Image 1 (tube, rainbow, N blue to C red):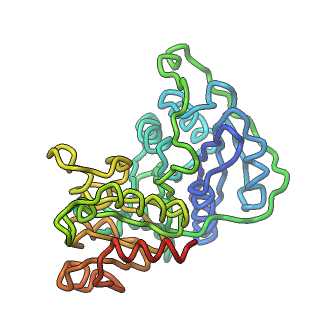
Image 2: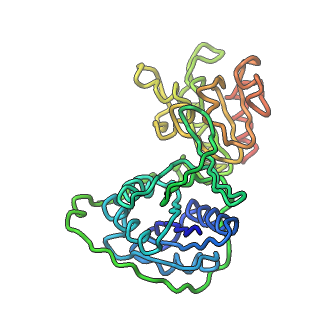
Amino acid sequence: MEKILLLLGVDGEGKLAKAGLEAVEQARRLACALSGASWAVGLVGRNVEDAARQVAGCGAGKFLAVSGDAFASPRYASDAAAAEALARRAEATLILAPADSRWMRALPGAAHRLGAAVDTHIAGIEAAAGALRVRRWYYRQRIEAVQSRRSRPWALLLDAGNVAAWSGEAGEAAVETVPVETSQAWERTKVVGVEAPEAGEQTIRPDADLLFVAGAGWTKKQADGQAHVEEAAELILDFVRKTKCSLGSSKSLVDLSSEGQAVLPFLTHLHQVGQTGSTPRHPKGLATCCHGEEPHVVGWRFIKERRAVNLDPNCGWAQGKADVLYVADAFAVMREVNKLLG
């Protein structure tokens, strides 16, 4: 009989992020699919009461918590210790956690202390005929494998965007506190502050419905023989502000600065989508001024509806890689789109 523990980090406001709520839904489905399985939620943060009430109706048999000032901010040493303590208290055979920065950093170390196997980038979990199998995305090999393990405990880090977030009603939950002995050695790592762009200039939005990707063509010479980088930047940012979409970029555009060429100043390697960048999971995607060859398209694997704008009718997007290709000048298209958006 499997004993499932779902680890969730609580933010500074005492709430759970969308990725955590998606993990709640995956854990709930798995517990229902495995005969005789039980599951518990393990919360880590400064104050966990609001988070416990947020998911009180999810069906978990227990709510465990490691809380206090020492666990307020994500940090490897404290998070790994908390995960180990929660797993031992729950006697977990399966340890699940959202694949966010907090647990991607800490859970492998906790798994080593527990003698557990660990797998990352889990895209789905299946339970059939009493057997547990996971779908794992191997990014560099561009394949999705179905695999299982007999060894227990088994820790799984769940990629976001694969299931709808759990959205049940809040309620009251009895939370059992799990003690963890703190250490002064943890203080070697401190969170001294958060640097974030102004709300109006935020361009990376994982939860947005649309991903807008800008390619290197935006900075190339146009029909008049001149590059119009400033106008390109204005058009792109105007669209992003009006639609609240997420902004991505091809590697070539991100790397142009190292070649001494003009670049869009707001793009960084964090925006990079593709073979050497991120693999986002937005419902819709619009690519502009990039050629749509394999290094770009591999990053669009999980985009459900793909459209592109390119002057070349024979570009990579036209080879069945986009649902719709608009053969047009992206400058003209985006000017008109921004006008329509008002």
